[in-house]
Structures are given as structure tokens and as C-alpha cells.
Image (cartoon, rainbow, N blue to C red; front, side, top):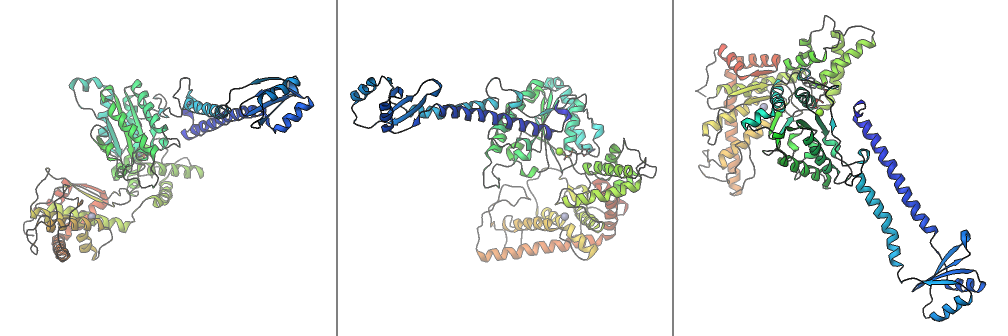
Length: 617
Ligand code: ADP
Ligand code: MG
Ligand code: ZN
């Protein structure tokens, strides 16, 4: 039933229903209180009582310890009055007076206070009861009223079956997901071997790269129910609802195993508790997160429930979520490279009539930085253009125009590099990569890419260390710094000036140089003195350090650090000047392909006759 409407519409309807029912209940309670008030005696004065008594209109009286309530008239006309009794008035005189006027009377135990309290407690109690009932904690709560019920949607496999055929350009992620599919299809096979099954799979990547799509396709391939809920759904106004929802979702999923639970936009609930920047602590989110952690710890993936989540902000996630036994497998879903974009365009033009002049490869080359969502959007825009002009086919012209439209939207959201910037980035990254390739102690280059990732990194050079390292020689550290500075050096060698791009490289290089001086004693000026406590972090991680030196020493440290960094920078420039031709060639190749594997680069160097590794620098 819900499937036919977009979720937000269903949500809105439900909210309206809640409001209506709530108003009705409140109204009833208010009316009840009012009715009570109608039957309550009207406040009056004791003298009025005496007057009424004299006039003979009093028909009934109730004598309390400090109040007297009397009735005037009878039947429908009856009116109740109450007055405080005058202290010191003789009880027996009052009774005699009542008897004399033939008034029936009775006494009440002295309280009044309790009836007052009760008159407030009962409506409040009713409200509270209704509240609990609507939260689904009392039996008989209907689905429509259950705030606490998980709003996870179950995809009906028959109508919305999505397979990996619909997901393109993210082959590595798909390969990983195939394993999950296999597990969901044959859980017994894994159980028999006692193999460790991932409990939680976290899809990480920029927006629009197909994380949600991939999760749905995984469920489609495995042919299992798919519980999907968005982190944003959890952020409700009432404390405790999110946690209840998590509990309920896991409960439902256990009954439906094998199945997939998918939490989209995990960062909405999984934000680091410690790093919460808002001055108001978000109890609701914290409770939800805690419940999620509890549920994750409590279930055994061998029953065939796989928890998946997606985020484009892995940096803000609470570390507790990433611990072993929780989201212990992370899969990166990156923006597609040239070939990836072509593949995605193929998927999205499957049902679109294309003119003969359309070349998807050319189109892919014109859309660097586009994610799957933008490419899908691009095809759709082009189709709309064609329809508007009454044509039967989508032409290359339509697609080109659509690029501009999508790009305009994209430019506001994230960076799209212009041609000149791409060129600079290509030379910069190639500078890192060449240094990594040529220096004897640098880590081997695994991949160079100028596919923009997110907003910060314009390109990336990935180096894969051959082994885990605990010891570094001075030569190794120097090579490492040279590689870090290689990007900047390449810019200077090629363009004679540097851009703002390498700021991060500089920082890392300087931090490393600093540790050479203050922690490893690797310098001439100050000698082998440990000036700062060694911290436990990685080599790249400056962490927190204890300063153990005077201001004068601090100055000398600064000078030493400067000397190391500028010496090594000169070294990087020398290296790249010597190989300027191959640097230009390789950067050109990178511009065309956007991504180059290490082997490819090695081949290019071999063909150019460059000897590796360099020993004379
Ligand atoms: P994310 O969840 O990563 O933000 P989505 O999965 O919501 O991205 O992608 C939005 C839409 O963009 C998808 O429904 C699909 O049409 C298209 N899309 C995104 N990535 C891909 C991809 N890798 N292959 C094919 N289509 C994609
Ligand atoms: Mg998504
Ligand atoms: Zn760099």
C-alpha cells in the first residue's frame, strides 16, 4: 500500500492522522473537565447560605469540616453552592437550623484536597495512558498509531527488483557486494565452515555515487527482504522514539531472515557523541545510536541478517560504530572514472532512443567529476529537451546542452574543475607519483587519479606500502617527504609557480620534518636529542605531544625544520626537472584517462628509458 506513494507523502498523512486523533482525545478530556465544573458547586458566602435557609429555598445540604455545600431547588433546576464555614459557629445550632427548615443534610469526611488532586490527576493519567498506547507499548496499539514502530520499508521484490546490472562504474564495490549476496543465498555453506561473516557493511562515498542503489541491488540479487530506513527518519521530536524504532526494526528483521537491514545516511544518527558541536546535547540521537550499538552487538550474523549502511560523512561517525563486530567492513563507492561514466551512461540510456551521432565515450570524457546521479540526470534532461522540440531521438546536441544544465547545478554543490585546473592537478599528482616511482625508499605507487573526490581532494596518488612498517630510516623519511613535496615541485617545474592546491602536502611534509628533529634526533643542528615524547600514532599522525624545551630551542627547531623541508623541496625539484619530459607525457596520459594504475606508469617510465630506482639523488 505504501509503495505506491512517495514515503514523504505517507509520512505526512500519518502525521495528520496523529494530530487529528490527538486533538479529539484532548477535546474529550477538556469537555469532561468542563462537565465536572458544571456540576461543581458555585462558590458563595456563608451569609448567602443563611439567607437561603431563611427564605426556605435550601433543599439539601452537605456539611464538611470547613465547607458547607447546599442545594437550592430540585430536579433539573437544582443549583449547588458552597461556602467556607465560619469558624466557631456552634455545630448543634447549625443542625437545629437545618432541621427547623426541613432540609435533608449529611456530612462528608474532611478532605476536599484529595478530590481536588484527583480532578487533575485523572485527566493527566488518561493522557499519559493514551500516549503510551500510541507509542505502541501497550497491547492493542494499531499500526497507524505506533510512533515506535520501525518505519523501515520492505521492498517488494516482485515490483522493484533491482540487480547489479543497474549499477555501473563501481566494479570494486559490486565485487564486494557479490560476496554478501552469496552469503545471503547460502548462509549454511558459510556456517558449516565456521567462516566469519561480516556483520555490518558500510558504504562510504560522495553523494549520488549509487550507495543506496547498490544496497537495493544487493537485496534484489540475493532475493531477500530489504528493510530500509534513513537516518534522517530517526530524528524525531520525541525522545525514545528512535531507539524504539531501532529495536523494532531488528526484531522484524530477525523474523524475516535472511534479509538486509539498510540504514541510509547513517551519519544522521551515528554522529560522534563526543564531537557534537551543537550546544544542546542531542539526547534523542544518542539514545538511538546506543540502541543501534546494542542491537548490533546482540545479533549474530549467522542467522542471515546483514546490516548495511551508507554515509558520505565517514569522518563524523562515532568511532564505536566502526569497531570490529559492528560496521567491520567498509566499502568505498567512489565517483566514477572515464570508463565508469561511460558504463553508467550506457545503463541510463538503455531505454532512451539515441541518434546515431551520440558517442557515449565522448560524453563520458566531457563529464569529469560527475557521479552516477548526475549522469542519470543528464540523460533525463537531454531526453526532455528532445521531447520539448518534438523529436523522436536524443541527439548529441541535446546531451551537450544537458551537460551544461547539470553542471550549473553541480557547480553550486561541489567543485567542477575547469580545463586549466585539471591540467594543474594532473601535473601535481604526477609529481607525487614520479617521486614515488623513482625514489628508492618511497612506497610503490598503486594508483594516480584526477577524478575529483568530494570537495577537498582534487586528485590523489595512492601509495601502497609493501609491508606494515614500524621502523623508518632517515633515508626513508626523506624519500617520503620528497614524495609529499613532489606535487608542489612539479607545479613549479612545469608552470614556474605553485597553486593553493598543495597546502595539505606542505603541512604533512612539515609535520614529518618536525618529528625528525624533535623526536627522532635526525638533524645536524640539534643532534640526537629527544625533545618531545614519542606518541603512539602513525608516522603521518602528529597527535598530541609534550613540549620539553625552552623557547630558544623552539627557535632552533623551527630553523632545522625549515632547513630540512627546503632542502628536500630542492631535491624534489631537481628530480622532476631531470625527468620533465616524462612528467609531461605521463600527466598528459593521466588527463586523458583520469586514472592510472601503478603498473601502467611503470611501463611508461620503462618505455621512456628512465632507470629506476634513482640512486644519485
Ligand atoms: P547515493 O545513495 O550514493 O547518494 P543513489 O544510489 O541514491 O546515490 O543514486 C541516485 C541515482 O543515481 C540512482 O537511483 C541511479 O539512477 C543513479 N546512479 C547513481 N550511481 C549509479 C551507478 N553507479 N550506476 C548507475 N546509476 C547510478
Ligand atoms: Mg543515498
Ligand atoms: Zn598533493
